[in-house]
Image 1 (tube, rainbow, N blue to C red):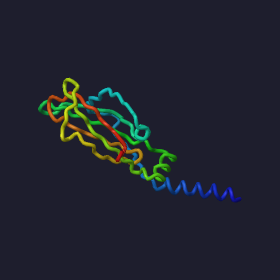
Image 2 (cartoon, rainbow, N blue to C red):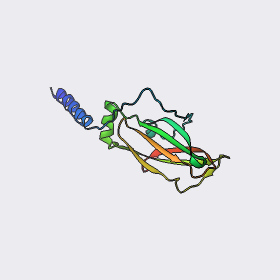
Image 3 (spheres, rainbow, N blue to C red):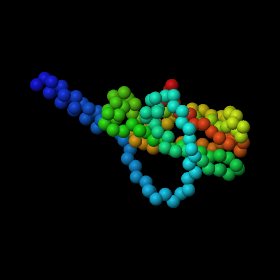
Image 4 (tube, one colour):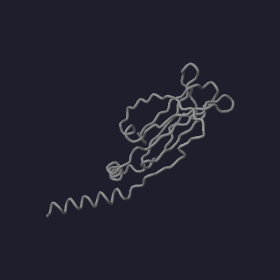
Length: 153
């Protein structure tokens, strides 16, 4: 009987904790009319926390006026489901915060130091999709690297 009380208490606690979790559901046009220039990306992950929580859905690039390069990365929080949401609530990881920085490279692959090359904060709730955008600082920039890390690390 005592064991049953513990099991029921644990089940109620999990239900209360996960019931307080905020998540995002989305709907969008399945028949896209836009022309997106997605690029192939190479992902190198050295941080298992971000790798298991944030997915890079795609990276889009376009030419802005004046020969500047414009990019947009679509990031999605993969922290959904009962156990992930319960764990996020218990550890205080909701919303989940990361930082990102975009490094620009010139036509020779050399790093271009700019005042905009700083870490910026972004928050995700489970299931949320966000887009980060940037425009190259000058027309010499031909490529980029997007850096992601856990907030405050």
